[in-house]
Image 1 (spheres, rainbow, N blue to C red):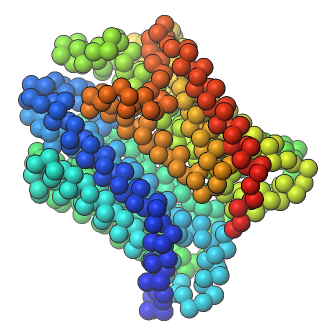
Image 2: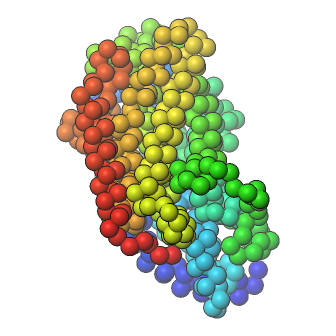
Length: 534
């Protein structure tokens, strides 16, 4: 590659930083503050070695290893080991998402909207846009690495181990930035490109989960997952730096492959060409709802398959949870602290976890409205007999039905997995209903996304804050012993699905009403504003 291929890279870097002056600081600060809060709160909640060892007994269960990591240092569960085992994975995943969205936004999305062709008509090299996006990704992940490391140092943790964790999280984000560079060359639509990268994140999580459960410290499957490498440094237990070479190798290899593939396609095209449609459109495409189904059916099928596989694998751990509680009475006390049976607590946690994942799907589904508007598709549709309310409610209606279907599939997956052991059919029914009980909370998130889109399309991405907030305080609220008022701000905190006899109906009705109000408010705002131009 000649120097001309990188012409104007610096200018594009400044342009990208200018465009992302709000988004990137939010991502970076959110990850850093998550670590800071954990470092500040955990010593208060688990102040004695005895209390930490009770927590270690919980983390030694197969279910905990599937959700969190391999569980190093459980024999002497220090604060640093607790953070590495229980928090790092859930900070590495947002770093990966930030990098994927960043690379896609500044490469494939620019080509999809036609801006890349306009910019390339000036003195800009072929690889300048990709290189600029990668440089911005390096800057962002460096910020993540520094903030997380400094947050750990604020808790008087060992400096070398703290920086190993911070650098590991940053390198995880960069590894997925390289993967996004490759997927940007494959698929033509930007949504398909980011979906491919996110599918890799999901596969990496599943591989790590299966590997960590299969063998103490993880087996070969764990080592195939980029999400596992930062935990394999064994920070605060037996620090080793060499696993951090793996994300660097992935970054170098994927970036080289991305450059190689980019010169083998036209600007705006993907290496995998879209399939030609039929000569005549199906009758369903004559309606906005049918178009919404057609646009998102591939992604929906992928979500359904991935969720079912992961849910079934999770449900199959039911007997392991029972055995772990039987062997460790103190562990049983942890599970029953809120009055729940240990298995009910396990099923409730799984229902919340899958509901949060499906809330992420709901946000991406509603955000398709913005993509349709930016590409001019909305304007073309509204030029026909389609009204704005019909267009808006059709997409929100699809999101509602799809989210309900994914919740159903997740609940069935956990129940079927549990029935592979000693659970009966009644467990299948209870777990499925418990998972479906989160639909009102999911729809509050979808309604908020729609409301923000109605006011101003650029604000719609702020709905991710609600998903992140719900995930952090829903999954770690009990660990950090947070006050109720903090967790109650999340719509997911008002559903206690197990046992079903205690399922609160009044909060579900309130959440449903709130979701309806948000959807209606979004429609009213959408009717009274101009369409967003490309």
